[in-house]
Length: 180
Image (cartoon, rainbow, N blue to C red; front, side, top):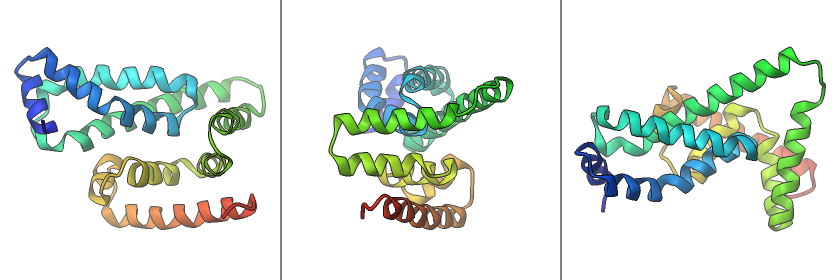
């Protein structure tokens, strides 16, 4: 069943359609959120995303554009969490907090999967947030350049330039680690 039909059924109040929609999109949303935040925050933010989806679904005017709409909500939730986190970091005097989180992500993924994947994840986590986000949306979530532009609220040309820069930065990161 298509996402568009599921959305329409959800808008008509069918609970089973909502459950099916969540089953179909839970993993992609969680993966996106996990790539942008640390593991502990990912579960909470993913729940916030689904709560916002349930609240906003009746007002979705274009059911066929569900995926970009969903990832726009996920992006806002991630951005809000990052703002909170940065605000907490500024008020606390503990140094090295961000570096510790990045190391935890690499170690956690590296223990679970092959060394190549660990190097890729480490490379991704070392990228600036805007470049990492574009790579995750385009390559890992398999969204089009146009959808990425809509989700990030930027022009298509900016998506292309960020993708280009992100690829270059990732190549440099992987090259520094001796992994190509």
